[in-house]
Length: 255
Image (cartoon, rainbow, N blue to C red; front, side, top):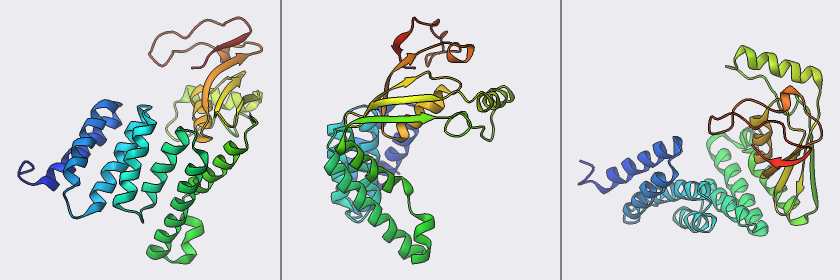
């Protein structure tokens, strides 16, 4: 049926792209989305094209193809100019290209449309509770990036990282409780304009530190160790192999 029904085939390809992206096969996801977009172009309901191009933009950005991601996001905006996510995607791509002024405008527009969508669906009183806070935060990050200068964050286990979450294993719970008790400060230091940073004395929760940097739209490019304990090293690297032994004091590759 999908072969004779372009819309059904388009949605099938979009779902396949979503599945591929979920398991980390970015190249396959891009291929599926591009094929779906070519079918969606001819469909009268342009919201389908907007959704497919939005996903395509996200996949291209994940593949570090920011210029192409910006083009795909532009197609999404063109297909559905009143959709907040389309503008968000354009903001993300522009930000990756360090086009901070353009990114700010896209994020701001996305926030306005998000509030409008909530107001129409749930009433004006629901906007403060339901509004996507990440959009206003993204606008603030653009302001920070345009200003430039030193970027610095002091992280405290139990407050910023090493947070015990539902489903955590008992060993992890014990480790994070110890981290909160030890109160070892971790520092992120970088350049607000380039959005690159180093972690100083990263310990206890590597994944949490990396995730926090990403939430601030910072790219972690290295680590500085001023001293070492068992919690600063060990475990496995991202490929499953043993982590490096403690390095001499100074700069070492980020995890």
